[in-house]
Length: 197
Length: 197
DNA sequence: AGGAACTTGCACACAACTGTGCAAGTTATG
DNA sequence: CATAACTTGCACAGTTGTGTGCAAGTTCCT
Image (cartoon, rainbow over all chains, first blue to last red; front, side, top):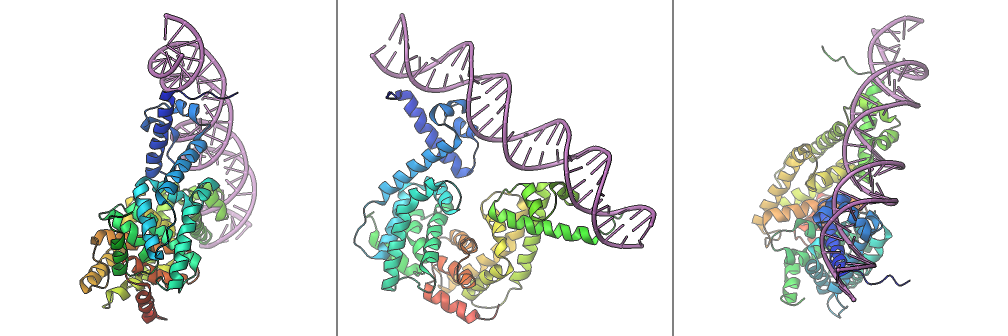
């Protein structure tokens, strides 16, 4: 009844598939199974030994990604909401530049509810910080909270996709800017985080 | 030799196809031909009477969109670069909320060079305004110009996708914010544009 | 070494989508 | 109204991607 523990070799291949899949999806959101398998050094057929099909593989990728993010985001602290936002951006950046496909799936409506629930905690944190900042009057309040939240999320995503110079700093400041914080002030906030998280 | 002018009816259908295509691509960047045709009230087969294939249809959509944009953007004026940026955003919004798929194609590397060349003038305008603003010190200068330009472009795109309340105003202010302009100042700039373009 | 676990390479069936041919129908327009 | 222009519906071939079955390997593990 108990499905016995998998062979060491097989576990490694499974990981390779998740890695390859993430890399492939990063380039093309609907990369065919065979290129993913090839990138993992396996045959297309072998994939079905690990996952029931493409969908299950993608779900696994998403779930592992979500776990990474949750781990990277870390516990909630009692700090200035702007700092909290900047920290979130930085943490996401550190966690994974390769998280981009996940985020893209999460935002572009589509894909399974898997992604939505996986990203839910992070999105909640964003909204909390934005709400606090709005109360403190440190972000623009001339548009409704939810819209602003979405814009901030997309801004974070934009940074991941642009992958430029000063990437990590942009990951912190750009979402702030999207919230209406001036560039100078945003840079200042990022500086207070400095070497820290 | 001369291909005779098309029947009035046929011209209308052609337009309908372009409209339907834009709408369909907006939802799904690779919507199948038959749903486009259906949305235009035509049969899939009829499409091949107007275009040699899917690619040519998409190209036609892109080209018409580019023309609209160019028309909407209007002539270059001698004005504050921030105002220029805000005006660009507003103009793009007015021109077409439905331009989103084009922009998405233009940014996400892919698709034909058609899109790239079509959008080139607009992108040049953005860079010019940003350069001037940088010199005037009204946008953040802590990251390189090209990266900032891309972020601003994506910000404009984000607004189109979010389609929220206060959409038109966001279309003007949000790209400014992405450039590091504070929310308050951005709103101010937008206000000076007011009823005007 | 020997058996189980895993992979491979083929074969095939199936689905979605594109592009084409052709006969029969509908509609604009001179 | 009569003809040319346009559309439709169907059939068909070609492509790409998925999921499955099975026999013959290879690799781990005891």
